Image 1: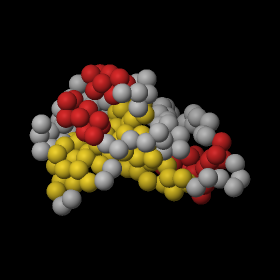
Image 2: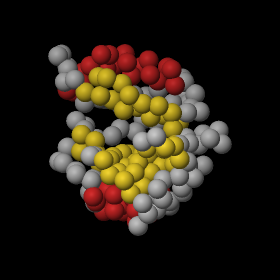
Image 3: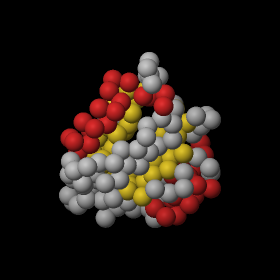
Image 4: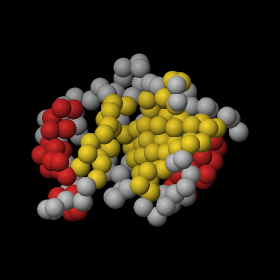
Length: 177
């Protein structure tokens, strides 16, 4: 197994093979209300179909994507993966259609839209080259307002090509181009 560094709820893998990723997932402290986040460096290209199948076999919620660089400690690498266990109040939601001006937002969980809302953090990741990003963020804020803290960024590859996301059985994963 490649060099692995573990700190709390996250594991950095220097070589992102399906075997290494699933071993990291199995080693994570996963609670009943946790989801797995997998951030892949663009230099590694595991077969996403096989990875999704392996993750679905574990009956877990997950999401992930490719990024130009993975930051771990003081190092930045275009290879490897960061695998995290994150507490969640609701399963990941994949929102399609950001390239259109009218963005069809899903119904968000009721605990976020009722008054007073349950305070939560929304992780928002978009393809860095998607159009209408600011409109999307504005529409999400109109629905959720200050009921959540927002954290996110643009995922993708440094080759500047758009890449869609796929929605497997229990999670969502950005697909490479």
